[in-house]
Length: 511
Image (cartoon, rainbow, N blue to C red; front, top):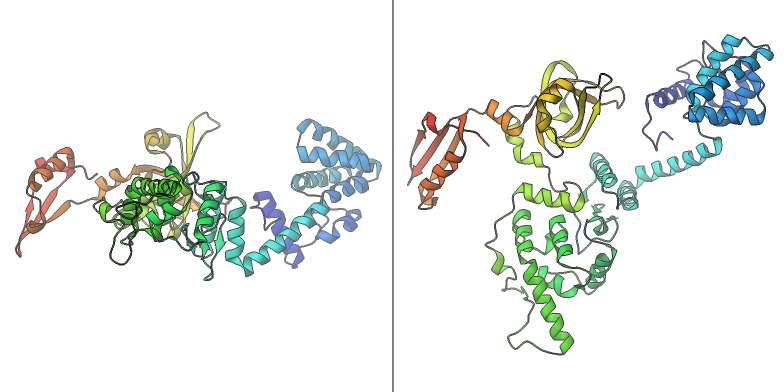
């Protein structure tokens, strides 16, 4: 059970107590050093005095309070449901029964409380044995075949994006290599290649069902796809439509078919080329069905040694990192080839105390930054509103408690997928065993930058400037005027340079 579930505080205490008793680090008592009875030893001895099984709850009721077998089962059910009125009745019955057995009623009630405390977490013995066997088998597989185990685990829940995201975090923690989906090597489910890399399952791409994936795998039997046009000409257009094609590009499943310049440029070019590739494939298919040949050669372009199927699309603007990552988030539910914080990594180092993975508990205020990956709002007992925000900075995650005053002051910034810089006190989280933060101040990236930046330096080389660049620069600065950030221009022309500091009228907001 411990291997399968993250235990709560009570379960953790029970598990620790069991282990410590087993290894002789804690006293074995039946069930507790303060409150125990010798008649319970035969019942609890196999589990070192810890109440683990539901059968033990029933046996304790029979031996200590004279319950019948049916009555003991009623007690077990009542404890599992935790109904106050029913438990009050059972408490009185238990105390009276123990008294009639010649057992101190006060001791009986203390033991009843201990039984009640653990009964809500107990399983019947056969259930526990089955779980223990599955736990052992899965732990063995995870230890000896980690990549295959994680691929199978992700495949079992590949239709639930939230679960896949959690499993992928585990894959990264384990140090395993996860490759993006690939139409030339991927299968419907997650698989492992000969080099022990996990290949993302094509079936886990949003907008791509089993039919399109089967069509891709069937077409691939003729050989690997060479480029986007070759891909479109070989797959069934009725199953792999334009929307599915766009999902394949955004997810990275077509990366190996692109111009192979860089990932952001390749995806931008292929997305631009999709309409033409689909059109050419449809025309070729129509011609083949009608038994016609094109007088001007192949409808579907072929790169070959000299040709370039992407020649007409090479003037496409390269995607930004943010566009690439957003595309992955839309199609996979997570960022696969990077993290939004990567774009600001160098800048963040100037106004955070440390990355989340290196943070330590301290009474002094600390500043961390990250992407909001989880966010929930709740009411306090006093009726105030507070929030819990989970920040992710790629090195780790931390839950941040934003209490009512801070929440009201910064509620407009607390939204999912926002990049935030938070100042507060970091302490141990007894529940999770990790760290948590109490927020004192919440800033978005623009605010944090405004508070820390000394100035902006624009480096210009005259030989690379467009004729109207001065007008463009003036327009850009004008649109951002009104801040406190000074602007300087380092200008060079044929090896001679100068740095010009613009006047206060040209101070900007460093957005």
